[in-house]
Length: 468
Image 1 (cartoon, one colour):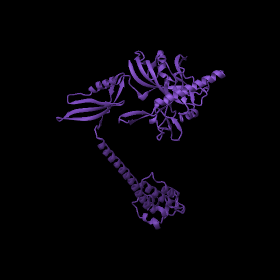
Image 2 (cartoon, rainbow, N blue to C red):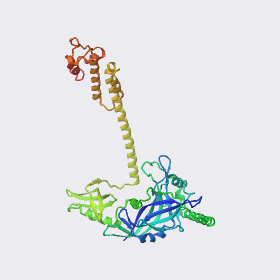
Image 3 (cartoon, rainbow, N blue to C red):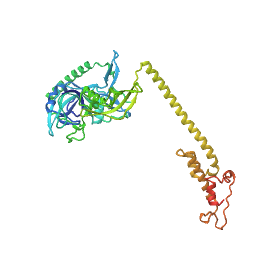
Image 4 (cartoon, rainbow, N blue to C red):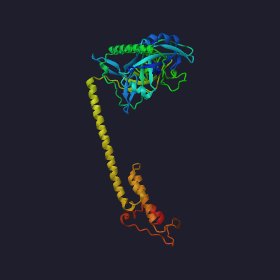
C-alpha cells in the first residue's frame, strides 16, 4: 500500500570534538531503529538500508526565537501562510538550513539490544548558525527530529501494526527543549531576510566550504597521525533505556487515519447517509476536519423546505465513522471582502463601546458603594472610632454587603455599651454587686438608637439584658 505520510522521529546526537574546525560543528546522530515503534508502526530492517541514499544532502534545519526572558531557544517546525508575487497563497517554512548531512557522511546500521540502529554524521555551519551554536553549547541537551515520508507499507493482521516497507528522509530539525505558550512574543532571530535567500546557492556555498574543510581536516590527520578520540555530549539522560527513541515517536500534524483522504471521506459519507431517516428530511456532508463534520440539513415543514447548517463531532476507528449526538446549528454565509470589512469594523466598534460601558458600570458601582458606606460609618464613628474591630472593618469590607456591614456595626455598638456598664454580671440578671438594677443612659450621638424598640440589632439586644 502506498501512502505519503509524514512522520517525526526523535534523534539522539553527540558532538565529535575531535573534528577541529572553526567553520563547522560535527554531530553524530542516532536516528531510528527497526522493529516496533509507537502509534502501532513498525519498520522492516531492509527499509533502513534502502533509505540510506535519501539521507545524503539532507539539510539540518532550525528556527531560533527569543523567549520571554530574552534568551534564544530553538523553536519547532514553524511555518506561516502568505500570498506570493502572483497572489497565490503559499505555506512558507520559517526554518532555514544551518547544516547538512553530506554525501561523504558515514551511514551505519549497528545491532544494539536486539535492534538495528541507524547512525549518521552531520555538520553545522557555525558562521550561519547565528544563535544555534550558543544554544547547543549552553543547554547540552538538545532535541532533534528527523522528518520522514512513508512511501509503502502493509497492515499486519495479527498485530494491527502498520509495517513500513519503504520510506525516505526529508531533513533534521533542531527543536526547543522548553517549548510552551509562555513564548507569546517570540520573534525569529535570523539576522537576514529569509525571503530573499536563494536557498539553492546557499546550500551550494555550504557544500563547497564543507568539502574544503573536510579535505583540510583529512590532510591534517594524515600528517599528525594518532587515534581520534570522540568526546561525547549526550542529549539523552538515560543511556540504558532500550525504547527511548521508540517511546517518543510522534506523527506529524496529529495524523490519526491510516486511510487515504478519499477513503476517509467515503466512510464519513456512508455514516451521514444513515442520519436521513425519512423522505421529508435529508442530510448531506458539506465539509469536515479532524474533529467535526459540517452538514447541511434540508427538511420539509408545513409544505416549505428549509435548509440549516449543522456541526457534529465524529470519531474514526478501524475505518468506521461514529457520529456524535452534539448537534449544533451554525451559520454559513458568503461575504464579499467589503462586507466582511464592514462587519469587522462594526464589531470592533461595539467591543470598544462594551469595554467603556463595563468600565463605567464598575466605577459607578464603586462610587455608589463608597457613598453608602460613608453614610453608614458616620452613624457609628463617634461611638466606635477607638474599637479595633470597627477600624479593621472600615479598612477591609470588600467581602461583605451593606447589610452585613451594618449588622457587624450594631453588634460592635451593643457589645461596647455592655462592656462600659459598671460591674455588669449577666448571671445576676442585669444587677450590679449591690443587687440594684443597672440603668443604662444613652446620650449624644447614640440617643437616636435608644427609643427604637423595633430595632433588631440594638433595641432587641439591650432589651434582653436591661429589661427595658
